[in-house]
Length: 589
Image 1 (cartoon, rainbow, N blue to C red):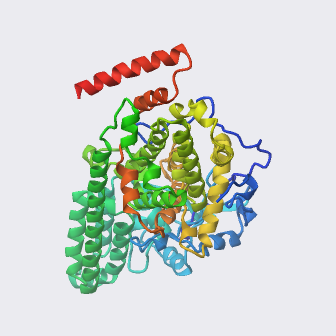
Image 2 (cartoon, one colour; image 1 turned 120 degrees about the vertical axis):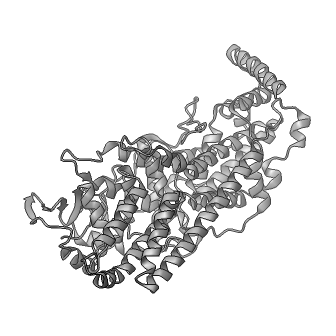
Image 3 (spheres, helix red, strand yellow; image 1 turned 90 degrees about the vertical axis):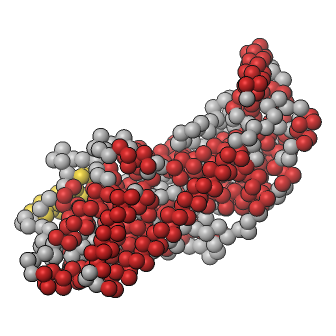
């Protein structure tokens, strides 16, 4: 059987738009993207000096087709591999491709030994291979698995499950393991998959002779342990399901009867898993406690006395670079707890094949949602800090401070905090403060907005992200490794990739090309997630950023009107209504 590498297809890349008009604010006139409520949702520089706007090598990746063998080799000589994840040692050999408008079909590495093992795997393929030549490639079928240029493109669900099962002389390619474990939850629950894989692995060793069965299972046990290790370390959150842990315990007992070495490996694997799940539980409790503190409301109706008593961000940290560093700490901490499967489960919950209602209620995408809530909080924190001061010059100073913080975030590679700051400064309660903005030099801000301009599907941002990714791959310092993407856009890209491609083909086969694409996007995130923040922690600043109360949208509007009075009758009516409703709400509480 050919190696299970993905189809070498076509994709377009985002090109740098050199004909873009001069930088200006694309969010003026109230068109700023507002943060989602609950759901997912050292000087000036010019665009030419964008530290990420660098020439992209390997132009073949941006051409209309990719077919050379050298292109494949390039992906696997990358200095930044997913396998470097500190707590996910056996990560897939996933490609590091540049962001594209239509994600490309990713190459996967397959060793020569793996190829020979797959080709001799006659217990899973009984049908004679059939080949056809289509234009520039060869399409072949092996039983219920279809390949194009030695790349798996489709197969039945049963064949894919069988292809995951190790034997004495076969172990699936690690990129296949990652891809199928990631996206199989679109078709069946992880518990069902694990049960079937373990059952097949045991049953395939049965011959009717008890002694021979024991010898054969002893030979395959190390590979089964390897598969389960990859599963527990790459997708540990699957094992918050009690049925998964029960199945894992049963396999540990089964392995103990045949091979002591494999049994010890299973014990160590289980201990690492429990430690990881314990850390997750502690993280979720800490986030819940911080959110409870942050829910305390500030004084709704601003007064000079109240404003003077409240600390502002510049009283806690007046260095934009230090604040950007602390924001990066928060971003990387929260990124590290997002499981790769959460991207898939965010839309797997809608799958009509779901037949166990309790599973997805337990396995919410809580860490992914918590990260998006952090983005929203930072946006509202920025807006609150700007609207709170009574004096115009103080508000202008806060705006200029956050512009400098945003610039430092951009230089670090922290695009998520950068976008949150821009979003907060463009919320309508802030944008309407015309007298305040007249005191601000907005040149740097307009350049930053230009970099995050949503036009052409965020083409400027995607160019900067490619540059940051390339810098990370050739990094000479830990700071240069940092890449924190604009997270909501990453989720959007994965969502539309899922919605735009059918999961099943007309013949009932699983569209594995789509699964390769999903794995490519998620595996790149895993590389970004693994980076350890190199900056010193300042607990006082961190505490302020995550716990200081922020205004709600209504409170922001009212604070804005208190800072600069209404300019027309509509705004006057709005202020009167907001005062009444907020006072009524406070009296009830």
